[in-house]
Structure formats: structure tokens, C-alpha cells
Image (cartoon, rainbow, N blue to C red; front, top):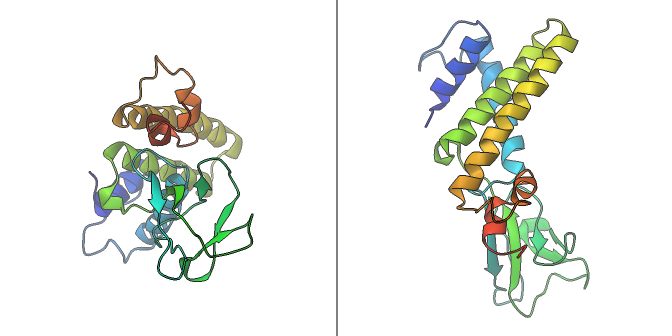
Length: 199
């Protein structure tokens, strides 16, 4: 696992910028830019949905018939069959677009993509986010944009493929038995596929 300091220094080093220590992590202009971009890319990457942050659970109504969704959920909700049936309203209350109601009589099974702290993320995911952040900052810092973009695209594809493979292996998916799993994993369906949603 990489600490934020280690991640920041890896990015700074890839950009040929001075490294920082624990006392200067939040004080230099370069490290502040890196930390902001790292957080931006981390959230974007989490929203892709991976085995470690995608869950399928039954959500039970409370005493008033409402289902309150945990604030750690960062991306779209999907029920078992429909992709757009449910939304989150004020206070995290689940809203059913089909019945135009926030009151439920029974459990609802939902697939959710949830926020996971940096320190709890797998090493391969951290590595992917660090690389993605470095590429983004290289473009911002200039150079021949066409050349840089070509390199970035090739590196991004290579690193994402590595991350997806790690996600598949970590989620115990038999990719030979289910050849489509590679495509599913590209949308973060690794754990969901393993749990039987597409079987």
C-alpha cells in the first residue's frame, strides 16, 4: 500500500519535480496540485466500479417504510433488473421512479458503487490512480500535446488492463469459463458477475 506521501512523491518524481516530506506535503505548490489531481482521479476511478467497491445488498425499509442509503455510496444505484428505477433523494432516502414514492413495503436488492478510503484500496488500484494522475498532469504541464496524448492513451490502456486483470483475479472470476468477463470487468462488473447477476 502507498501512503499519500509516497503516492505524491511517485507522481512528482515522474514529472521531474522536487520531492516532499511529511512536513511539506501540503505546503508546496506542486504537491498541492498533485494532491488535488490525485483525489480527482481517485474518485473518477472509484466510480468505474471494481470488485472491492461494488456491492449487492438487500436494503430494508425502516419503521416509516423509507429506505435510507448510506452516504458512502458515490455512484448510480441499480436494482437487480432495471438500470434507472431508483434514485437517491434528500437525506439519502431511496426514491422509486416507477411508483413515484419513497415508501417501500419490502426489501430492495441494489447494486451500489461505494466510496473506499485511499488507505483501504488495493495496491493495484492505487498504482492505477497514481499512473492516471501522472499522465493527466503531464498533459497539463505542456509539451507536444499530440505526442503526449498518444503516449498517455497507450499507457492508460496498458495500466487499465493490468488493473482489470487484478480485479478479476481478486474477485475469483473464472475468465476462461466466462470469456465475456473481460468486457464486464471494464465496467466494474467483476464482483457482480461472480455473485451471479449475469448467470
